[in-house]
Image (tube, rainbow, N blue to C red):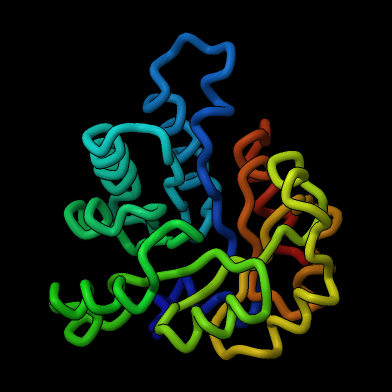
Length: 230
């Protein structure tokens, strides 16, 4: 289970913030190399003191994924920021990332835990590597918790363009139900803005995760400062 760093313990008194990358959106109409564009936003997130950065680049080759992860970790340097790798636990472990985030098509969290134990973690270094899961129902959340997840993303809470095809958003009532059902951090995701984030925290979320809220911000630090004041 999650043994938070001093930074992560802050979710007890302030929202835990996670920027999820999406290089496909960044590269639309921009001839610059995609990896460089993503890294620029990661560096901006680091300067803005976002707690976690999830590298979620599903459609790039393993070599480029590993290189981007390595560059992100090097950019973090001594900053208290955790780099999470979406889906690719092999890359996360090979590059000494701070954790892996598992989606619906990823390996089960129980299998991820088995791999971590084989690599000597987390028993020897609690909290050095965490595993989270994206969930879309109360049953999913409970399953992730019982399977050993350190945290979960739950959503989409509000309407968001990327999830319209999957039906109605979960809403705040379901978020509240989920947050009270498990004893691990629940981060709300999906359609989060600086205006509606407070309602997610009031429902019991330990923090928020977002793509557009952070990635599209002209001034990411300003966004994070507003969220810290909620």
